[in-house]
Amino acid sequence: MKKLQISISPATFLLVISMIATMPLPRLCACFLAAGIHELGHIAAAKLLGIDISCMKLDVLGARLYTSGKLCSYPALALLCLAGPFVNLLSFALLVPLSHSCVWIEELALSSLSLCLLNLLPVQGFDGGRTVHAILSSFVGFELCERICTLLGFFSLFLMWLLSVWLLLRTGTSLTLFVFSCCLFGMLFV
Image (cartoon, rainbow, N blue to C red; front, side, top):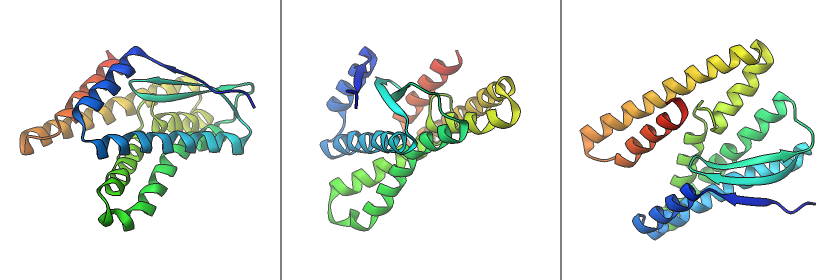
């Protein structure tokens, strides 16, 4: 077994520093633990599918795992992409009954659910986007799939942005969601 190489972009380092400076400790720990659980789901699925992971790169959109050797089939790729959100959903389901006993467990359960739902969005670079791409590619071909996935990602981020604006105007909260959706939109489509 080869050693997994990990690289972190400077922007990610700054994001982590800002999270440390602004988030309460239970939420911060829960976010990092939920992200770790998510990536372990992908790594476990890769092992089960016989896919070697050579590198993990951390960027502003999250962690990206890179495979070495053979390319996997579209169904295997879809399973690999869905493994992370599935493990987050499973951890949420297991932690919810215990969440009333401890704020740390409640934060971990909510962070796991949030990460699962966010990653299932059909947005380029997210697990949901890669899953949709893998499934569509086998039916409609690569070029048409690219167009469909770009439109799905655009409308998904637009709806997220609309939700963030509505929440911001209605409740005065969700500034983070607003900034996040604007940044994602700018990174992916501008």
